[in-house]
Image (cartoon, rainbow, N blue to C red; front, side, top):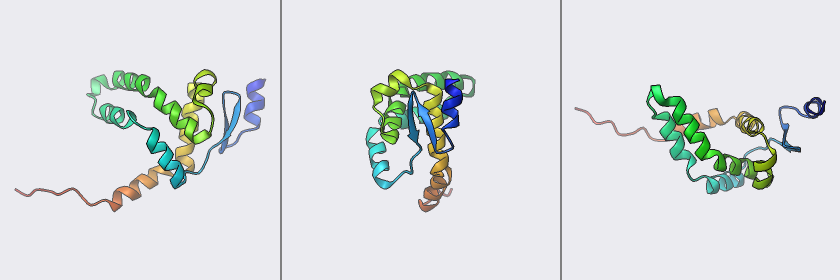
Length: 128
């Protein structure tokens, strides 16, 4: 019953992290700065997962997820304005991931990445 009521009061831009209702926010330049100042290990872990041998991919994902959880929670804390300690104790992993997915969708980050990539110069190609 509690989940039914929670779901009734949410939409694509709001959801619950634990018992706290949060809004999926627009990522402003100031928010980007805050996010980049909290991220430390995550980029390296993503690269390791992307470069993992196919037969060991899922074990890499599990190991990276465990190592990255603190940073993921920190990112959600910055985005949502909810204390990291509260998220650690009360928010479900599914809620945290759902919040990140909705943030990516709301801010159209896939297209943003493509557009930024198109602005970068192509790497030098050596001719033989």
